Image (cartoon, rainbow, N blue to C red; front, top):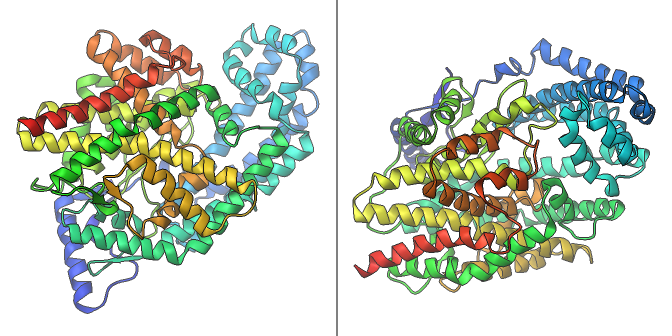
Length: 626
């Protein structure tokens, strides 16, 4: 097992003199408390950048793509109309799936290596070269989905009704949803080829710019992730200084972030226009396999609930701090007069696994593999991708989890969240490369449910009123961040993309749009002092996956409803839940929710999930009255 103490990772740009000594001492102290933090072992994919097997597989992937094109390009319609269509089409789809798995394995390895240090030129070149070659190779596969979609529906329905093609019916049905928006083959090929120098290049510029930024806080020179962590420091002076440092550095780089945002929004508008999407978010709804009216109902329900949720909670939190309103840097501050401790890694691991075990030993067993087999990268270090994620890689391998663990209670919840994703990805893997991926309508279900299990386990074991209030408050804040904040993000994106369609946006215009949605969602008890304007610039979802963010709110409200079902009827719930996860992308979300008696298309559905948040706030208010 490869481990690295947090103390081993020092800022890339050291402070001077006494400041450097203090920074080193802080890092050493933190490392001692956290204990050894695991780094992932990627050798299950490839041994390293110079692994000969990687080069061999990359060449093989290119050759298999060419051979597939030679075997099937221009022939799919004839095969589908032939007497043995079910077996011959299934043979073609199976070959396509094997190639997709190989391509995914290669790209996953390159992406994971790159995320470990996005500032390293060798890794960046390896990632860029790999992406370019795989994009070129994928061009030879592009025809297949297009030709399948040109087969008459009645002909394809007959073929899919029989084995072995019936196994792939869910994937083919999903493909057919794309029919109205697919273009002529050469244009599709052009879009794919140009992606390397278009959106993918701007994505990479964003990543490398963010990773290179350094923020000075209390004598330490930090990258973004530990600086954001300072916004949860018990010392209000540190929180204010961290917010100021973030604002100052982002403001100094806003020309770059504004250019990236304008370019990617225009790039998306061009693609949407060519494909015939009417609304700026329609492509995301299609990819998520969710009806636009369902998302609209979610957004409307959350917006209507702002006064009952975020406005109400932050007013209560301001009261705890003895104020009428809190500055934005105190929004996620720990409660005053509540002991804050750093949680060692081993304790975080055991907390999550114990919570998972109480719900399902099978779930805990899968999660334990991530610790035992080095599938987690936990230390915070210069150049490492900020935030956290669970990467599914491909079904022939296994997922990997990245976190930036610094011992905060929220870090434990983040670990529970990403392991939920990981469990989901492992369970869905047997569906194969084409049907293992889960639409975003359900992609956040396992992660948020894992958080809820962990939180409820901890809360049940907490009798001290002060600690219980702190835990409830932290959970409410997490839920507000997941639901209210993410819907505000979605509305911000809509405003940006709609405005960009009329012309290029200035930094001031983007800042203004940001402040308007934030003020509406956070309410009067949070003051958006000068300095908060550029905080939109570091959010990676705006860049990498436009309109993804509503999936968090979708998942949180859905999980609240699921958890209510669990509380009222535990018998058999775990088995049904694990079956939902194991389905991956093989079934539509409505069919998967039916066994739980849930229907997200019901206008009142979202109020159930939002009501759970409201109930927790009411419990906190009741504590004040005792």
